[in-house]
Image (cartoon, rainbow, N blue to C red; front, side, top):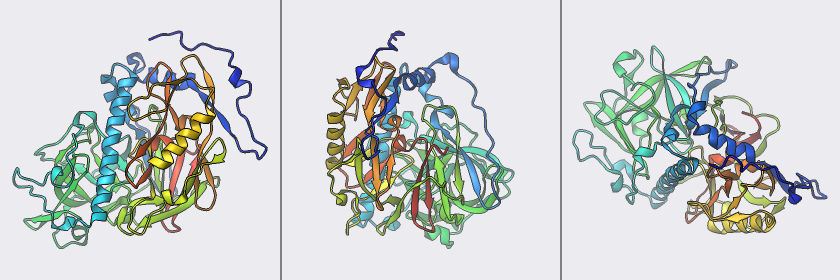
Length: 485
């Protein structure tokens, strides 16, 4: 590693850090290169390792409930197996590709009218329903782990704490349970149903059981299976349990899967907390009027909160929360365009709309890292950005990124602004660190968007970091509140 690459140079291009047009719309913003690169070095520096300190959930009002929220890097130190930040980035991007495959596969199944209710989990034999029965086989990144953000969730009576992946693209809550026929490695001890007095199995005739897409019955106990398009699955008993939200309260009889056979991309977390739009997701079950989360930087050791029934901050950029009648799970946002350098790109708004067949549209997803845009929209964004960034030194692409820059001789750099425009005309201006990210520790930064052949566009968590994203389920409004972690 060259320790002298942070050179304080006189940059002619930075005679003004922020240029403002006559209409007061910022056309450039300043990226702190030195700070971003230093974070990559700190994350992989063994001398800076420190035990993760559990933070208590902030005191909440009587009507609100809250979990603490942690980035993966602060609790599950798989990044210490990587010799440099570039290999860690490759691992993250491979995991991200699996995630996007999973989302698009789920959508395609719904649009194709596949009747999942006819699929049965065969949990008593080795011939259980495999992911390849549901989708094109994808190599599963079992060793890579899954989930970028974890909620600290209390389960059972007496309460035991578990790290669970938060997922706005799922409807079924689940956790690994003893006895395990096949369980992956997790940070916390595996949940023991016999140690909880509030644990209860669901009958095959229960409403919760009938709401499952894939279900079966064994000895009058409801069985569940969730298969993800990336080759992962969990299968076991469908049960109810008490969920405790830090010090802010608890809710009894929340339906969730108690998984005895769990394979795939979930390493580290005890299970998954589903925040999607279906009837079995956590917000639906606790009859939450709203929920919001803020994602801290993925390389940070700090935490934030996942909150239910709290009002959106006053400074929010708002957009319509839309539903696709063909897919209840996904939470769509009314988006109409993208700005670069304060100017709207010439992208037809129909690119971002859900059409009559249920295709298209934009979802905001906590589990996808890099924003995926339909190729036409991505190409327009990339071309406009590179035109306005002619003063920046281009370099080779990296993995799924085709637009990268060499900032190794810079400590700060002026870059074109990027924003998302929503139905109603409001624009969310992204911070430079939300769209230009380091992929190594040598000053190589890439434009953190990627094209997709799918009709579905996805706003990923790199673009959401540092912004509180709220869903008002009563008013059908999505809110974005920068600097509200």
